[in-house]
Length: 328
Image 1 (tube, one colour):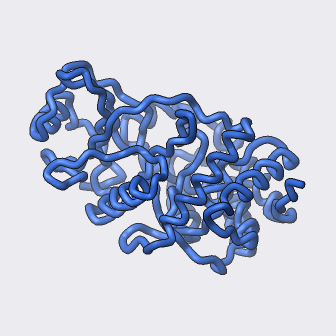
Image 2 (cartoon, rainbow, N blue to C red):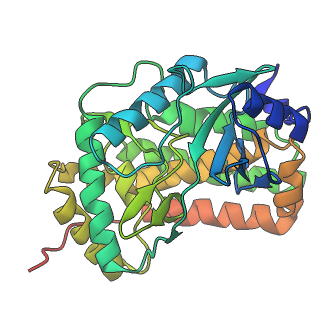
């Protein structure tokens, strides 16, 4: 099966309910789809009115070993009292299989949206990220990848070269902007950090608030610099970002030392995410969910905007990196 073309079209509601029934769970409600494009995630209620979430992994994206490493990391975090979404085990297995689909089941938990402009909530998140990384440093990932230029920039650039989604009249300018961005990242990127196991996609949308933060969706867990789990929380103008960064790092360092040299990687990581995200959309275009939810990807305005965004990020890479501002 080709991962790029996989569409989940054979994952029918009956298939999902049969998969759950095999594990002793009787679905007694509808299957409510939750916001996920990479995988398929549904909330439901069983006959005892308990609520669950089931997550079906996109086949061939991650190997069995890589998913098991994600689960093991989550279980270690739970053991260390880091608030992450818990996994249910069936016959001592958290990764289950039905008709070729790998899936996992979680208790359904509620919560409010994390307020990215709330400095008190930001402090609490920083504290728990310090604890998360304390766990992340205990052992390395063996199978999961490490953040690097090849996966995030070089491979996407090859995809862009032959992409039919990019309007022909705009492709030359887009590729020129891409090449300039890649070159700028190459000048700033360094590997002078100690990699650790990360959440990997720690933005506000992956944090719920329940009298404290709850981190969800470790699907993008991988190895890399600690700052990867910090920079996506920053928002607003530079002054606001400096205050947020100082708040996060001060709380973080209650549990883990933070290497300020990693601040140099914030803008390279931002650039890498811009390129990688766009390549991800293009790789998934054969999945009907993507044209339906991202129809603007076929418009000229979108590609002009992407070209401008790459040029703007290249300029940002020429500026001095964000620095910590003392809290007192």
